Image (cartoon, rainbow, N blue to C red):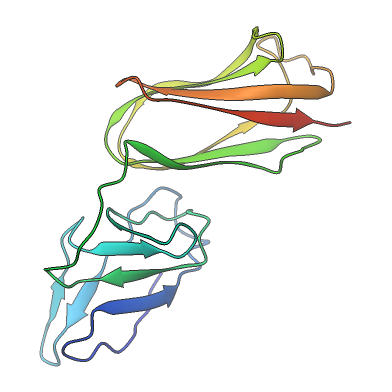
Length: 177
């Protein structure tokens, strides 16, 4: 994937639309600047990302596969920013779903992740993920089945994501037939 924009001296942001469909998901987007004579690589986490959907500025990497159409990126050294939590951009799509849903998340540092599905009574139905993962953007699918591979009944379910540091995120999923 390649892209370019003009950034004049004093400009603080780059606006871009990335369509990295042929690159492996989870790869870090890399930037280079060019001053008219030579190019220079921008260090990982060497930029601040403005996310228009959350209206936040964060010091973080951008990964291939993130669902955002575009971000504003600032290379300015005195930019004011926040530090994202250890896990963010969690979504479940589609929801409700019929055959398969995708659970996506961005890990902002290396950590152990457990992602599980529970029924409305709180009984664990399936473990989707139980692994040590490096920081990055991840997607895991659930096909509406249990640990034995049998389809479960339509209804309300919950996904729960736990990190090794104790963060826990739970939300509702609706399976329809």
